[in-house]
Image 1: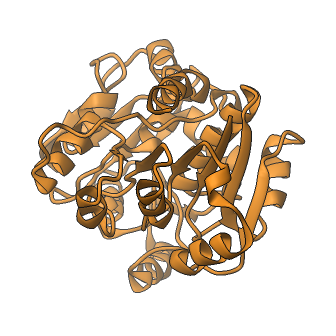
Image 2: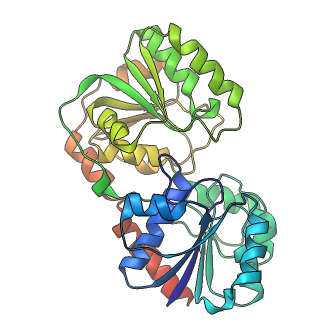
Length: 339
């Protein structure tokens, strides 16, 4: 079977460092290749290099483009290739032009929704595109938003657990991991650590953010932090080293921020590190036991929760449940069902 996988045009697939959508998209692609499917990948120029560095010689057929305009990339693909030659389209793009084409030409497909309310989602839904969400929370939220007759299906995001080490030997610090933006709770994390004299590290993507001045302000002020070190983007191995030794991964999402999945939670858990996070979005779906972490409503609860005793082995076991080989078995079942 020939499967065309469509990624975003924002960064390389797989990402060189950070990029949740592009990482999950690459793992879906990798799994299908390992299962013997013939796979094409629509992605940003340079992805073949990051793929080789991260995954080795087993590669898809790359359709790379310099353009970050998804519509132009789609139109170029149609001019140069026969899209109808593919048996299935797995679409992780933001705007869903490939999926829209698939509906018109009766090509089986799945369009993943990676944001709370993705661009064109209502238009795509009304045209009959097969929309998938990434958590039960996301399914319920987007189904309500669209007033769908039935809840949209969902499939959890995944990671390659072989890329993560775990440790039960913890050091006395906490970590924030995630895109550097206000909604992710970076400011709250910093203010908590400074107030309660808790050593902390801020790790995350700080290039492709909407509010660049917010990032610049944090970096500028970080020289005056007494307890928090701003790390920002780091290579994967350094991220894992910091995660596995942290006593807690602390995620202080803003009250009005809804996390549709939260791949950072899974990364922390698979490193054997408990997660303490604000109770919103899909957080409770991942932190499903008091042995692996806690959720909070008020910042006043945080200090007590980060000092609770958790079971590091159970954390690791929970993280392993999101390995791409396990999650993608479900994906393959959906593909075969639609075909």
